[in-house]
Image (tube, rainbow, N blue to C red; front, side):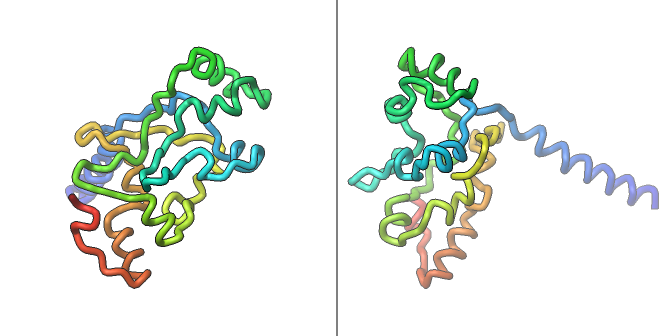
Length: 176
């Protein structure tokens, strides 16, 4: 009985400690709020996260996109003032930690999902557009990938959505 309890405690402790050990954690370089941009400024996802005519996706906006609105403070927050002082004024790109960097053998096209399938950003990204702050970036110390890449976007989730939509995906559709 004591042995079984000891094993359970050891397994539970190991399982809890493993996620703290394997992932390094750091904040994003800018205290960014999607909520302020979406609700207060009325920005739409595609205004900052541009899908180019050739179907490639720009992902995180470059500084010149942000500077168009933030050449001078639009609000009174300390975060915005720091952003302008540290990045906009010196014309220094923000080195964002990217949550969604895919493994080298995976190909994903936002264009197909947005334009052809007509999906909304929220379908895969959830309510990110109303988040008050950027989540801390957590990186797998072994593989170097973000922990968030698998949050709700596993291969099984993609296959399940494709089957629900009447599509029969092949491995080579995503794996190159």
